[in-house]
Length: 102
Ligand code: FES
Image (cartoon, rainbow, N blue to C red; front, side, top):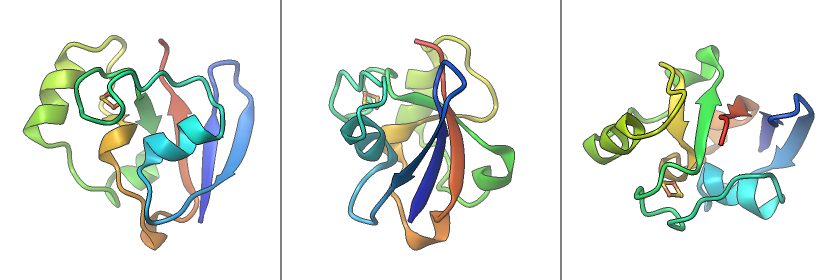
């Protein structure tokens, strides 16, 4: 599955995802500048991304833990998600997102 990412410099990347991974793992393993300090435990908000509007409704909704971490993050928008909380599936083939500022 393809994942289309815009980095903080506006450069576009097309990554290959798989359904055994979270979005954060794919971004991190591709060497993109995403800290993911807590390793995916929903405890740091350093994996913050903006999901393209048209893809938002296809992914799971934020749970309470994610909401409370995002409350402490900067530059939060209604398209904000913590990428470690998004499990990939074939349905998300072609998903588009942008890295949030650090
Ligand atoms: S990696 Fe820490 S909240 Fe996602």
